[in-house]
Image (cartoon, rainbow, N blue to C red; front, side, top):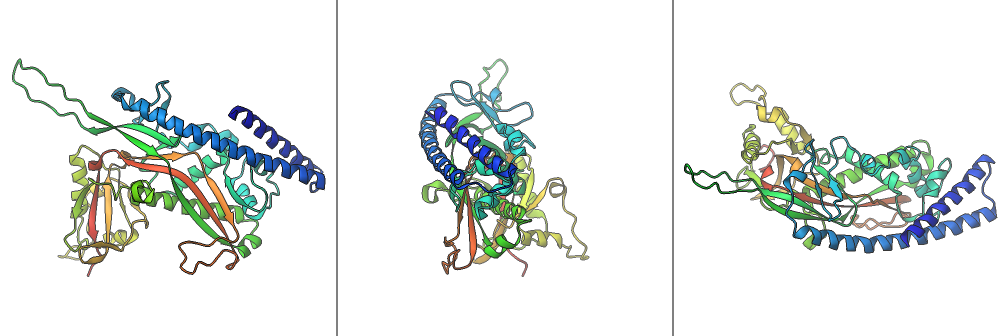
Length: 442
């Protein structure tokens, strides 16, 4: 059934592309008859897309049950858990389908084999067409679009979706630090090492007691994460040349910040239907700046956090803090002579990344302006990411976070909302340490 629908879908796209190319070659608009035929094809494409989504949703549920049940009685094979380059991999299904994390510098497009397809497509032109209904010089992108002119909810085609995900990952602070697992179904179960082997001392000729690493499984379940950008109608109308770049820049930055927030601060699926982020994961290590917090007067707390991670046999690959903390560290001086302090080796040899996703208004004892810093082996953080992006464009929606509840129509704006699906898992909680309760100097 699905194969037949996909074949029909592709044929309709090819037919639409021929109509658009013919009009382009003859330097004319489509005739009334052609427009009516094109709209009928578009409506049919929408119906097919919904039917394929329904079939895929059913298959996702079946795959989730099969994969999860298939993993439950199987002890993960340590020899299969890592590639030669250290990238996590394993065989998940009874048929031996290999699932692995993206390798260093590998893109989503390369992983899914859509790199060549996306080269001839412009994500910006597609987004411009969705927002403005102007498909000039974008006939191929229009042929992939399954909504009628005027907007609505639409799945971004896979080649462009992969390209956008790669742009988002490049704009993110967190994605270069963590391992990313592309998800091909709603649920993905990954074996994890939860404890190291324990050495045993023995007397001469005594029996050697076996001690294996402890294994468990973590289940990724794709959850929605969204980003919304607002663009004034005047800007849309008056900036046709730069509009594509502007829209993509706004969307990728907003998406990257949303995903970074989820990786760091996701509140969990039980109450909020979000992934559980690093900060809210029970069991991560910590260094406390005091009952009511404290200002950083030297690098000692950061070094202590670093070596707490090292004590667990992990090698930290970064520090994370916000701009306020970065500014405090930049002007640390000695009490004796006022000279700037030299960072210790533990701080000098790993990347130091700034993200303002980390807030300055956390409660810590009586302090209400506290923040934190993180260090650790962030490769112990696994992020599952589905190959699906949904774009919605509205000229009359309202922003739920705007207390005035003004609509796009009353503000003469266009709202663009993008939704992806992801999950987060921390493989070893003792691989991350937080310096908690950092407050501004008095």
